[in-house]
Image (cartoon, rainbow, N blue to C red):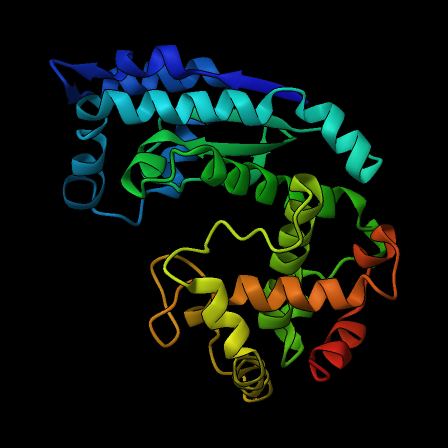
Length: 280
Protein backbone atom coordinates (compact mmCIF):
# COMPACT_ATOMS: atom_id res chain seq x y z
CA UNK A 1 0.00 0.00 0.00
CA UNK A 2 1.28 3.42 -0.98
CA UNK A 3 -0.16 6.76 0.19
CA UNK A 4 0.31 9.57 -2.34
CA UNK A 5 -0.46 12.89 -0.66
CA UNK A 6 -0.43 15.95 -2.95
CA UNK A 7 -2.19 18.31 -0.55
CA UNK A 8 0.71 20.79 -0.34
CA UNK A 9 1.00 20.91 -4.13
CA UNK A 10 -2.67 21.72 -4.81
CA UNK A 11 -2.18 25.54 -4.51
CA UNK A 12 0.29 25.28 -7.40
CA UNK A 13 -2.68 24.69 -9.71
CA UNK A 14 -4.00 28.22 -9.23
CA UNK A 15 -2.89 31.63 -10.44
CA UNK A 16 -4.35 34.53 -8.41
CA UNK A 17 -6.88 32.06 -6.94
CA UNK A 18 -8.05 31.07 -10.43
CA UNK A 19 -7.60 27.55 -11.76
CA UNK A 20 -4.87 27.32 -14.39
CA UNK A 21 -5.09 24.21 -16.55
CA UNK A 22 -1.45 24.37 -17.67
CA UNK A 23 -0.27 24.53 -14.06
CA UNK A 24 -2.63 21.66 -13.20
CA UNK A 25 -1.27 19.50 -16.02
CA UNK A 26 2.28 19.97 -14.73
CA UNK A 27 1.08 19.06 -11.21
CA UNK A 28 -0.84 16.01 -12.43
CA UNK A 29 2.04 14.63 -14.47
CA UNK A 30 4.18 14.55 -11.32
CA UNK A 31 1.69 12.19 -9.66
CA UNK A 32 2.14 9.43 -12.24
CA UNK A 33 2.94 9.09 -15.94
CA UNK A 34 -0.25 9.49 -17.97
CA UNK A 35 -2.22 10.66 -14.92
CA UNK A 36 -3.26 13.99 -16.46
CA UNK A 37 -4.45 12.28 -19.64
CA UNK A 38 -6.45 9.73 -17.63
CA UNK A 39 -8.22 12.43 -15.62
CA UNK A 40 -8.93 14.59 -18.69
CA UNK A 41 -10.33 11.62 -20.61
CA UNK A 42 -12.67 10.76 -17.75
CA UNK A 43 -13.94 14.36 -17.62
CA UNK A 44 -14.25 14.77 -21.40
CA UNK A 45 -18.05 14.42 -21.48
CA UNK A 46 -18.56 17.38 -19.12
CA UNK A 47 -18.75 21.04 -20.08
CA UNK A 48 -15.49 22.33 -18.60
CA UNK A 49 -16.48 25.99 -18.38
CA UNK A 50 -19.93 25.33 -16.96
CA UNK A 51 -19.59 22.15 -14.89
CA UNK A 52 -15.94 21.89 -13.82
CA UNK A 53 -14.28 25.30 -13.64
CA UNK A 54 -16.71 26.83 -11.09
CA UNK A 55 -16.09 23.91 -8.71
CA UNK A 56 -12.32 24.20 -9.07
CA UNK A 57 -12.34 27.95 -8.47
CA UNK A 58 -14.08 27.37 -5.15
CA UNK A 59 -11.09 25.43 -3.79
CA UNK A 60 -8.89 28.44 -2.86
CA UNK A 61 -11.88 30.06 -1.19
CA UNK A 62 -12.36 27.12 1.17
CA UNK A 63 -8.98 26.79 2.86
CA UNK A 64 -10.43 25.74 6.21
CA UNK A 65 -12.57 23.00 4.68
CA UNK A 66 -9.80 21.56 2.52
CA UNK A 67 -7.50 21.52 5.56
CA UNK A 68 -10.21 19.63 7.42
CA UNK A 69 -10.44 17.15 4.53
CA UNK A 70 -6.67 16.72 4.65
CA UNK A 71 -6.68 16.13 8.39
CA UNK A 72 -9.41 13.53 7.94
CA UNK A 73 -7.41 11.88 5.15
CA UNK A 74 -4.34 11.65 7.42
CA UNK A 75 -6.33 10.17 10.30
CA UNK A 76 -8.06 7.54 8.17
CA UNK A 77 -4.91 6.43 6.34
CA UNK A 78 -2.80 6.28 9.51
CA UNK A 79 -1.96 2.60 10.18
CA UNK A 80 -4.55 1.64 7.58
CA UNK A 81 -2.45 -1.20 6.21
CA UNK A 82 -2.31 -2.80 9.65
CA UNK A 83 -6.08 -2.45 10.06
CA UNK A 84 -6.71 -4.19 6.73
CA UNK A 85 -4.45 -7.07 7.72
CA UNK A 86 -6.24 -7.37 11.08
CA UNK A 87 -9.82 -7.13 9.79
CA UNK A 88 -9.54 -8.87 6.42
CA UNK A 89 -6.44 -10.99 6.76
CA UNK A 90 -5.19 -9.50 3.53
CA UNK A 91 -2.56 -7.23 2.08
CA UNK A 92 -3.77 -4.92 -0.67
CA UNK A 93 -1.63 -3.82 -3.58
CA UNK A 94 -3.04 -0.30 -3.94
CA UNK A 95 -2.09 3.36 -4.20
CA UNK A 96 -4.28 5.86 -2.30
CA UNK A 97 -4.07 9.29 -3.90
CA UNK A 98 -5.36 12.60 -2.54
CA UNK A 99 -5.35 14.98 -5.51
CA UNK A 100 -7.06 17.87 -7.27
CA UNK A 101 -9.06 16.45 -10.16
CA UNK A 102 -11.48 17.70 -12.77
CA UNK A 103 -14.69 16.74 -10.93
CA UNK A 104 -14.02 13.06 -11.63
CA UNK A 105 -15.54 12.07 -8.30
CA UNK A 106 -14.95 12.28 -4.58
CA UNK A 107 -13.58 8.73 -4.69
CA UNK A 108 -12.76 6.37 -7.52
CA UNK A 109 -11.39 2.82 -7.58
CA UNK A 110 -9.28 2.45 -10.73
CA UNK A 111 -5.71 1.71 -11.88
CA UNK A 112 -2.58 3.79 -12.35
CA UNK A 113 -0.07 2.22 -14.70
CA UNK A 114 -1.31 -1.26 -13.85
CA UNK A 115 -1.49 -0.72 -10.08
CA UNK A 116 -4.91 -0.60 -8.38
CA UNK A 117 -5.60 2.87 -7.02
CA UNK A 118 -8.10 4.79 -4.94
CA UNK A 119 -8.33 8.39 -6.17
CA UNK A 120 -9.76 11.03 -3.84
CA UNK A 121 -10.75 14.24 -5.61
CA UNK A 122 -10.34 17.20 -3.25
CA UNK A 123 -12.57 19.49 -5.33
CA UNK A 124 -15.52 17.06 -5.25
CA UNK A 125 -15.00 16.33 -1.56
CA UNK A 126 -15.34 20.06 -0.92
CA UNK A 127 -18.30 20.47 -3.26
CA UNK A 128 -20.19 17.69 -1.49
CA UNK A 129 -19.07 18.82 2.00
CA UNK A 130 -17.60 15.37 2.64
CA UNK A 131 -14.51 16.63 4.47
CA UNK A 132 -15.25 15.22 7.94
CA UNK A 133 -13.58 12.06 9.26
CA UNK A 134 -16.79 10.03 9.01
CA UNK A 135 -17.16 10.96 5.34
CA UNK A 136 -13.51 10.18 4.63
CA UNK A 137 -13.88 6.77 6.26
CA UNK A 138 -16.78 6.07 3.93
CA UNK A 139 -14.91 7.24 0.84
CA UNK A 140 -11.65 5.38 1.49
CA UNK A 141 -12.98 2.20 3.06
CA UNK A 142 -15.64 1.78 0.39
CA UNK A 143 -13.19 2.02 -2.51
CA UNK A 144 -10.78 -0.30 -0.71
CA UNK A 145 -13.71 -2.71 -0.48
CA UNK A 146 -13.87 -2.71 -4.27
CA UNK A 147 -10.11 -3.19 -4.55
CA UNK A 148 -10.21 -6.08 -2.06
CA UNK A 149 -13.09 -7.67 -3.97
CA UNK A 150 -11.41 -7.51 -7.36
CA UNK A 151 -8.10 -8.77 -5.95
CA UNK A 152 -9.81 -11.62 -4.07
CA UNK A 153 -12.21 -12.75 -6.77
CA UNK A 154 -10.73 -15.59 -8.79
CA UNK A 155 -9.76 -14.77 -12.35
CA UNK A 156 -11.52 -17.99 -13.33
CA UNK A 157 -14.77 -16.75 -11.79
CA UNK A 158 -15.16 -13.31 -13.34
CA UNK A 159 -18.35 -12.01 -14.86
CA UNK A 160 -17.01 -10.50 -18.07
CA UNK A 161 -18.62 -7.41 -19.53
CA UNK A 162 -20.10 -9.63 -22.24
CA UNK A 163 -21.54 -12.04 -19.66
CA UNK A 164 -23.11 -9.21 -17.68
CA UNK A 165 -24.79 -7.82 -20.77
CA UNK A 166 -26.09 -11.21 -21.92
CA UNK A 167 -27.74 -12.04 -18.60
CA UNK A 168 -31.07 -10.26 -18.27
CA UNK A 169 -30.34 -9.39 -14.65
CA UNK A 170 -26.59 -9.09 -15.15
CA UNK A 171 -25.61 -5.39 -15.06
CA UNK A 172 -27.97 -4.39 -12.24
CA UNK A 173 -27.26 -7.50 -10.19
CA UNK A 174 -23.52 -7.09 -10.59
CA UNK A 175 -23.72 -3.47 -9.43
CA UNK A 176 -25.86 -4.40 -6.42
CA UNK A 177 -23.46 -7.21 -5.51
CA UNK A 178 -20.19 -5.31 -5.94
CA UNK A 179 -21.43 -2.19 -4.14
CA UNK A 180 -22.83 -4.42 -1.41
CA UNK A 181 -19.49 -6.17 -0.96
CA UNK A 182 -17.69 -2.82 -0.81
CA UNK A 183 -20.14 -1.58 1.83
CA UNK A 184 -19.75 -4.81 3.81
CA UNK A 185 -15.95 -4.45 3.80
CA UNK A 186 -16.44 -0.82 4.86
CA UNK A 187 -18.45 -2.09 7.85
CA UNK A 188 -15.77 -4.63 8.77
CA UNK A 189 -12.99 -2.05 8.64
CA UNK A 190 -14.80 0.47 10.82
CA UNK A 191 -16.23 -2.20 13.16
CA UNK A 192 -19.83 -1.04 12.81
CA UNK A 193 -22.39 -3.07 10.85
CA UNK A 194 -24.74 -0.10 10.76
CA UNK A 195 -22.19 2.40 9.44
CA UNK A 196 -23.52 4.16 6.36
CA UNK A 197 -21.86 7.46 5.56
CA UNK A 198 -25.04 8.23 3.59
CA UNK A 199 -27.05 8.25 6.82
CA UNK A 200 -28.09 11.87 7.02
CA UNK A 201 -31.58 13.26 7.53
CA UNK A 202 -33.05 9.91 8.60
CA UNK A 203 -31.74 8.06 5.52
CA UNK A 204 -31.06 4.74 7.28
CA UNK A 205 -34.34 4.77 9.22
CA UNK A 206 -36.22 5.37 5.96
CA UNK A 207 -34.38 2.54 4.21
CA UNK A 208 -35.08 0.14 7.06
CA UNK A 209 -38.75 1.15 7.25
CA UNK A 210 -39.20 0.59 3.51
CA UNK A 211 -36.91 -2.41 3.19
CA UNK A 212 -39.43 -4.89 1.77
CA UNK A 213 -40.88 -2.52 -0.82
CA UNK A 214 -37.41 -1.36 -1.86
CA UNK A 215 -36.25 -4.91 -2.51
CA UNK A 216 -39.49 -5.69 -4.35
CA UNK A 217 -39.01 -2.71 -6.65
CA UNK A 218 -35.35 -3.53 -7.28
CA UNK A 219 -36.19 -7.16 -8.15
CA UNK A 220 -39.02 -6.00 -10.41
CA UNK A 221 -36.62 -3.78 -12.32
CA UNK A 222 -34.06 -6.56 -12.66
CA UNK A 223 -36.69 -8.96 -13.96
CA UNK A 224 -38.00 -6.44 -16.50
CA UNK A 225 -34.53 -5.17 -17.48
CA UNK A 226 -35.54 -1.68 -16.32
CA UNK A 227 -32.81 0.74 -15.25
CA UNK A 228 -31.84 0.70 -11.58
CA UNK A 229 -29.75 3.88 -11.84
CA UNK A 230 -32.18 5.69 -9.51
CA UNK A 231 -30.75 3.57 -6.68
CA UNK A 232 -27.10 4.57 -7.17
CA UNK A 233 -25.24 7.87 -7.17
CA UNK A 234 -25.67 11.11 -5.27
CA UNK A 235 -27.00 12.72 -8.45
CA UNK A 236 -29.91 10.24 -8.63
CA UNK A 237 -32.67 9.32 -6.22
CA UNK A 238 -35.51 6.88 -5.61
CA UNK A 239 -38.51 8.44 -3.89
CA UNK A 240 -36.34 11.39 -2.92
CA UNK A 241 -33.51 9.31 -1.38
CA UNK A 242 -30.11 8.88 -3.01
CA UNK A 243 -27.85 5.81 -2.79
CA UNK A 244 -30.59 3.42 -1.67
CA UNK A 245 -28.92 0.65 -3.67
CA UNK A 246 -25.91 0.75 -1.35
CA UNK A 247 -28.18 -0.13 1.57
CA UNK A 248 -29.89 -2.92 -0.38
CA UNK A 249 -26.60 -4.35 -1.59
CA UNK A 250 -24.98 -4.29 1.83
CA UNK A 251 -27.92 -5.90 3.60
CA UNK A 252 -27.98 -8.58 0.90
CA UNK A 253 -24.27 -9.30 1.37
CA UNK A 254 -24.67 -9.37 5.15
CA UNK A 255 -27.25 -12.13 4.72
CA UNK A 256 -24.93 -14.00 2.35
CA UNK A 257 -22.10 -13.65 4.89
CA UNK A 258 -24.10 -15.89 7.24
CA UNK A 259 -23.52 -18.74 4.79
CA UNK A 260 -20.19 -17.97 3.13
CA UNK A 261 -16.63 -17.11 4.16
CA UNK A 262 -15.08 -13.80 3.10
CA UNK A 263 -13.28 -15.45 0.19
CA UNK A 264 -16.46 -17.24 -0.87
CA UNK A 265 -18.39 -13.96 -0.69
CA UNK A 266 -15.96 -12.47 -3.18
CA UNK A 267 -16.52 -15.34 -5.61
CA UNK A 268 -20.28 -15.85 -5.66
CA UNK A 269 -22.12 -16.73 -8.84
CA UNK A 270 -24.89 -14.58 -10.24
CA UNK A 271 -27.35 -17.41 -9.57
CA UNK A 272 -26.46 -17.61 -5.85
CA UNK A 273 -26.80 -13.84 -5.51
CA UNK A 274 -30.11 -13.65 -7.34
CA UNK A 275 -31.62 -16.51 -5.34
CA UNK A 276 -30.75 -14.79 -2.06
CA UNK A 277 -31.99 -11.44 -3.39
CA UNK A 278 -35.42 -12.96 -4.08
CA UNK A 279 -35.63 -14.02 -0.43
CA UNK A 280 -34.89 -10.57 0.99
